[in-house]
Length: 531
Ligand code: SGN
Ligand code: CA
Image (cartoon, rainbow, N blue to C red; front, side, top):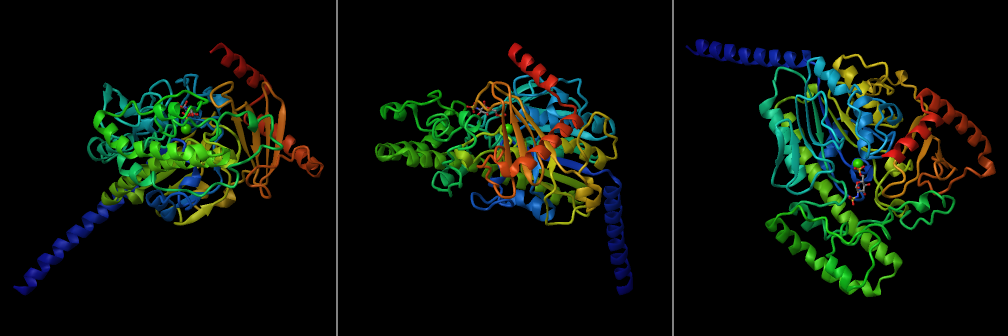
């Protein structure tokens, strides 16, 4: 009797084991799923895996712990929609045509999701795209119109527009999880683009975090009071200074009444960014933010330019970082789901931003420049069994490389027009197959908000050469190893004369390699003037 019982238990356990094995091998034989997580304007300085001075991001850090952190990832054009166009097409802005946020994306471009969809991948996109038209190649999408709202956002869907009550970061995640749980075919591989609006300006945190973050103070960056010596004509004319251009109302969330009462003249509009909150949300908000007005009224009379800048900086970072705390929580929800469903083995997870951002460096917020904080972008990738966990990779990679990377992972051929390089060799420990010596950058949106002049440039691991053009003609050279904060433009320093010659030659060559030219520069200026 005992023997019969034992045999039954044995057969039962053997069955379970063989089912599990079958499931595992099914998962192994299936092409990998791709979860592409991107936030909007997320500075690498605000991810604790890069820098733990400002915020703890334990969930985003999980990706680095279990995978690879890229310390030298950059974008080709540091602004939202152009960066997204580069990611989807694998082509530089001057080739895919989406040079700035204003022009519409040319939907005759072939994107990697279209190719994956054709190859049998299920495809879905949730959150911010900012293209002016709907994405092609997606079975399902729910995207924000334009910039979208933090509170009670509207989403464009294939079935029409819908407004969803709540906080955008939570909602984008709810939509993403709902698709993964309920609406995909679990037998097919998938590409999921999970795209946060946060931490984009005007930095409206959720109730969960504004209570905590409005109490915090943060260390000041070394270049908060940069005087732009050696960069007068370019950096100095940009309109993205914390002191002058962050508005006390729209950005720092003081009420227009307070600002008027104190007789302060705002550089930009005297407005409020809080119109999307409903009554109940607004009441909770006011309970926390109203006292900040009273406190400011007391302090303002004794403030000088630098204490005023520091106050604005702290207020800016409190809200900016609080929006990231929500992103981190929600990334955790998605990672947990993948773990609970035992999908981690066969899923590559990428976390990145559409570009970097200034958190007070050079006295700035915003992006656009080829200087490090906005040129570089966070990039963390995990892919168990392929990537050795916990590695930091310092090779120069770009958002231009995603399309070819994902196509290679899925075993799909890239198009001839794509200009990036697959990151698979770096991910799988075959560094000898990677030989990139320099990356190219080109920013176009000028004249426009923030007044960052048009420029293109080349970066190697040692130097960065930038040419500002259109209504100026200035050159800058940075010694990246000796001047990581990029405050010394050494272009005219005789000690660097040979480097200037060498880098100018390299810049010419890389312009040819990527098919960019003065003729195209002129064409885009004319096109811009017509728009
Ligand atoms: C808005 C912001 C700008 C920001 C652009 C582009 N102003 O216009 O500060 O540079 O978006 O951002 S705001 O007062 O309306 O917030 S991007 O990430 O979409 O490129
Ligand atoms: Ca952006």
